[in-house]
Length: 145
Image 1 (cartoon, rainbow, N blue to C red):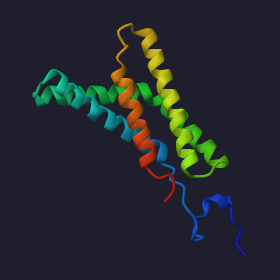
Image 2: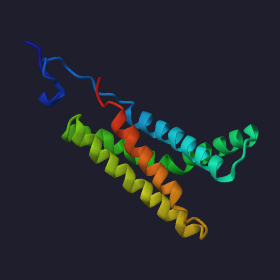
Image 3: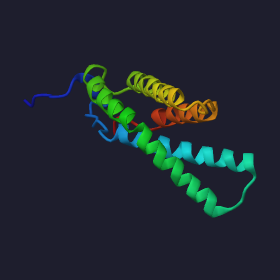
Image 4: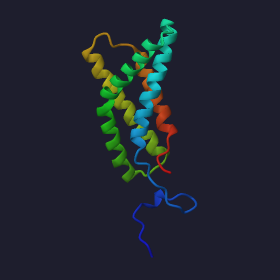
């Protein structure tokens, strides 16, 4: 008789073991940054009505690099929360929603800190775009496979 090392909530209805997707935080983080940068670029294209491809490409990479740098501490906390919460909750929609709330709070804190340092940073466009992309990406990807 084999010992089961994983809790019983890791089993699905057909009695097969589910494998935890350990890359879930990284996948959600990177896809959120890419999707948000694309949405921001499209919004800025319609706002300023430019068609210069080189300027748009440069702006996309600037937004992407700044997003990577500014959100890296939030990613580390998100990854730590994922590892700790899977021990208590197990994979499922409750874990996804709790992680989405955690990452939204981290994003709000990051924007609050940026807003305190920079008086011009009151544009809520970034806040809404990143918030909606976080929700979309965190609910789209699977925690188990």
